[in-house]
Amino acid sequence: MAKTDKSNVETSGGIDEKYECTLDGSVDFRGRPAVKGKTGGWVAGSLLLVNQGLATLAFFGVGVNLVLFLTRVLQQNNAEAANNVSKWTGTVYIFSLVGAFLSDSYWGRYKTCAIFQVIFVIGLALLSLCTQLFLLKPSGCGDEDLNCEPHSSLQLGIFYLSVYLVALGNGGYQPNIATFGADQFDEEDYAESHSKISFFSYFYLALNLGSLFSNTFLDYFEDKGMWALGFWASAGSAMLALVLFLCGTIRYRHFKPNGNPLTRVCQVIVAASRKWRIRMPLSGEDLYEVEGKEVANSHANGRRQLLHTKGFKFLDRAAVVDPDDFITKNNQSSFRNPWCLCPITQVEELKCVLRLLPIWMTTIIYSVVFTQMASLFVEQGAAMNNNVGGFRVPPASMSAFDITSVALFILFYRRLLTPLISRWKKDRKGLTELQRMGIGLIIAIIAMISAGAVEAYRLKNVCSDCAYDSSLSILWQIPQYMLIGASEVFMYVGQLEFFNDQAPDGLKSFGSALCMTSISLGNYVSSLLVTVVMEITSKGNSPGWIPVNLNRGHMDRFYFLLASLTAADLLVFVACARWYKSIKLEGRYDDDEDVSNV
Image (cartoon, rainbow, N blue to C red; front, side, top):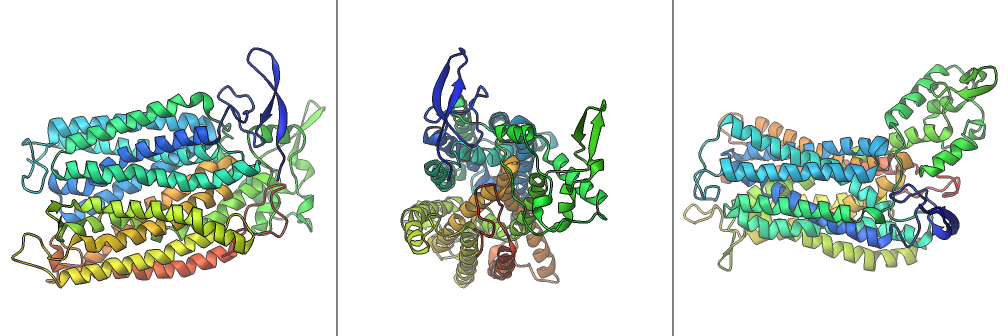
């Protein structure tokens, strides 16, 4: 592990003072080397955790009850509302790729977070105004008893514009805030690198604690038909999050953007294709790597050199030196043509992305399971007896048990399980990220079996003479929510750590965006799966598995189908994890070390 460094930092007043600076290439808000004790650390990290909690409160103040808003206010049926929520949620995470690209390429993470948070606030304010002025007519509509009037195309257009501005703002902000928080800890410092690992767990905890308020208090008001109040509270929370984020400006550590990664990828592919007939050297030591000034510039931008790895040998051709790869100007100096010769670090960047993709693809089915909490779990709860001790429990507020489970399991994992496994394995990380993701898939299978069993039992207790569709209490949903929460701690926290750790330095935001796009595609796959299942199962006189009246359907079979798909996905995940080879940074791993084996 690298030792701390005492560097001379020139202050704005021209006075040189000796400070202890970071070794990872981070800079302060003025572009000077970041000074430990004055930048970053848990001071900046804690501010970003609070920012994340408030922004999450604002987002879930809209998202958690959107399916009920669509059915009660816009008069959509269950299947249509569930599909629209899945598409909207999926779009949120697709926009994360936009934010990650702008951050890694041009704007940097701070500027990207600030701009998309402003868009987020504008979207929430527009949604609040639209709901209060146009959609809640007559006054008091939107609860279980009073239906709202039909809406004009213009009113619906403003509504969808506002919710998709919310999607754009939150989507572009989310992958960057996680990576920006991790940037506040020097990976080359032993103590700070350990704090960086812990940050992702606390980040996910802050996310869930923020949604706890929206899933309880805001959910209660919105379930009673006070939609405008709930949306204005979300807008206020997002505004406060933006103000707090800007207050930490002088404290943050930054990494300079590294230019368009698509160009670097294309250069490798073109250079390798041009040399498809060239003779390859016997070892990777003869491949081209930058030296001198280019290395210094790369380190100044926070990019470390990558070591050569086996696999994808065709791409290595881009780093084979040929005399024609250099362009001579004015018969004096020669310059490397980046479309003919690429340094091995650039080649390895592309290899890293290609190795991450199979792991990423196996997380999509898990996201299909996860997204059921915002759609089918809510509809299932609405068909149960939600009167508990004389108090009516809003179906969407049951996700509070998921949040509670996340908080408990994060503390359990970090405070108890990790120390025990670390002592046993003699490795301070405990379980590897891929091992934790595999455990998350196993727990998700159990969660779907639990949800299916509850639904099957609910159907046996349908009560035609009762005030509710079923006499079965909504509290029977607690196990499936708790299990999903436990699986999130292992899957999503492990996923955040894995993609941030294994993504090249110039693509850190892209690594976090991969986590979010898996959730995005999970929502789209869920929507497609519901459509296909309904198309197949509703032929003839059959109402299908997920009809408007759930008492006439078989949603339990849909849950069991998801459990089977997740089990098959687990087998593919294990195969991909065993094949995966971790990134090799200069001075970080030994040649044959692999931190990711399952």
